[in-house]
Amino acid sequence: ASYEGEASLQVVIRRNEEIDPELAREVEELRLRDPATGLLNRPSFLRMLEDTVAQVGRGEGGNFGFLVVEADHYTQLLSDIGLDSADAFVAELGAYLSATLEGNEMQIARFGEQTFALLMQGGYAHTVEISEKIRGAFASQVFNIGARSASVTVSIGGVQIGEKIASLNAVLTRAAESLQTSQDVGGNSVHIFDPSASDRMEEERVELWVTRVREALAGEGFALSFQPVISLQGEPLEFYEVFLRMSVNDELISPAVFINIAEEHGLLELIDMWVIKHAITAIGERKKMGHTTRLLVKLSPGSFANPNLVHMIERELAIHGVPGDLLWLQTTEAKVFTHLRSAQQFVEMLAPLGCKMGLEQFGSGLDSFQLLNHLRPAFIKIDHSITDDLVKSPELQEKVAGFAQRAHEENMYILAEHVQDAPSMTQLFSAGIDYVSGEFISMPTPAMNFDFS
Image (cartoon, rainbow, N blue to C red; front, side, top):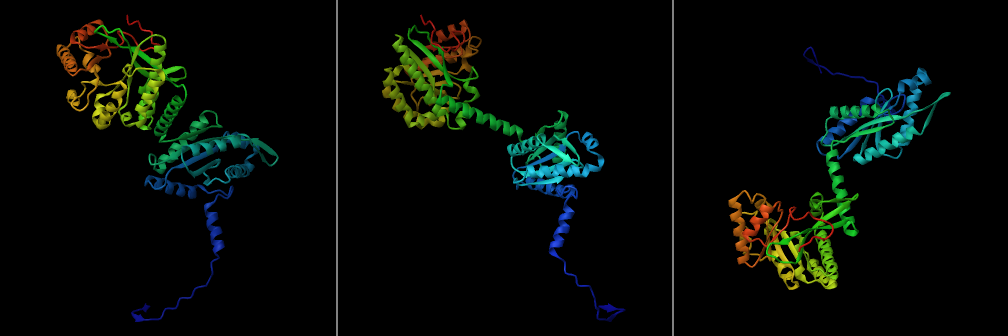
């Protein structure tokens, strides 16, 4: 040390006190706790909540549920039990809340005069489950405060903390709004805000349709509809295009609703096999009734690589005594380009059975006939975008006539769909189209009862 510029020896004397670690822990614990309930107090809980929200915002902590629980009609309850018993009443509520949630990993705090807060890790379903557990427990309990007793229900508001809501202010605001929503319906209610609700609803919707498709494949949930395809060249044979439908609550649902989901979950090939198998069965049943009926069935390109499909077709044709040329399969032209090798192999395997393979939505590409250099279909079906305005467009009429001429030169049949009126039929006949279908002829129906004569 230095004193007025001269070197000095400084002696510091302090009292030596050993701090009791247990006592220090108890003091720190008291600082964090609410004295009336023994639960965490608001400041300590808010610090914990803020850390959790920040952690989730950084993508480090998964999902957490934050709940605010408040006794319904607290002011009226307080007047009944007496103001002097307020702390005892709140302590009783807090103790019961802790006992109800014993064994669950979560933090519980006294957040306000009659308000409790909870923080737990888990997804939306877990948060809702805990909330309903609390609500149900309070609704069935009678609390004794001194000589008085009271039945208490609670309102619960909450928010699911995730990356989509990762600021403390937003979490507290949403929780307060959810609590108000529960109270506005009369209390004894739960309302949880989930920022990922739209994602969750979409997941649930997808899961529902996947389940329905699986059940339909295993049972009788699918049904077939048949739309007549008539020959413009005078062929008397019965010819129908097959359409798949799913029966849901006595309503027939179009595949457009579920087919993409089925494809994403690897179910499209199974659907193809189901439809083809039942189509062959239908042809066999018509044969027993004295009818020679040809069916046109859609096939997804993914089924080209299914080694069981051709074997199944061969087996079902033999079982029902159906000639292979009564089963025509069609697949989308645009998707064949990405499955060309497997499509070539499939056509080669299918040929000995007599079944015919064709391309639908033909003409939608830049040079559809280029594909015919690599794949030899038995027929092509013109894309409806070309034939919809056929009557009004001489250019399209010339294009369709060119398609028909080229198809016949290649020994292929040519079909047109979505025919809406008689003038369109006339134009298609003049162009040399072999077969047509559409609403002008008949809508798809569950029964094959069209009069082809």
